[in-house]
Length: 180
Image 1 (spheres, rainbow, N blue to C red):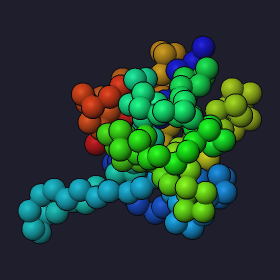
Image 2: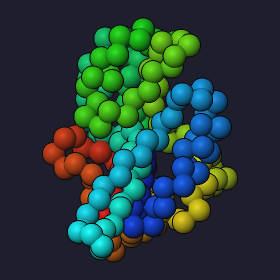
Image 3: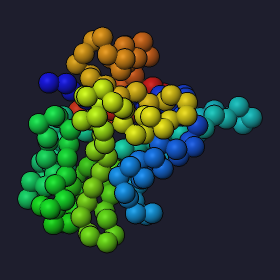
Image 4: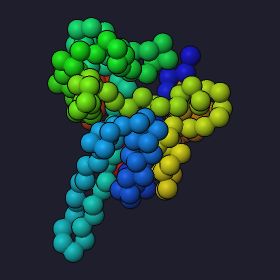
């Protein structure tokens, strides 16, 4: 079984929000919902200041803190290793939001249920038809999706070449890697 993950190269991200917009459309999200949020980080001193755009989304942690605290099992690890939310079981208690060390859960203002990035087209990826919507939409090629356990996969090669690492090592065991 594949262990899916994503690499986000912040040196290529221009903060255009195309990935977020594509994700919102793909997943039928409300205007006030987004599975991807953007943080900026400034470095350097005037006049040589650099602003880095860092897209954040569910890290699909191997040890998912959100799933560990869910009282109904709505937040759980799927058979494919992707952290999922069963909307029919979610009671909107927000425990998963509090437990997420990355604060990337989203509450639906109409239903009260909580949702998050789904690696939306994993099933399509396995059949070879397309990539995750955010990866497909990225104008600069800043995102790569694939099997972290396959040393010949594009993502594994890029992680090795760039030294990509989780954004906050030690918080959890995330499957999203960043080039910074």
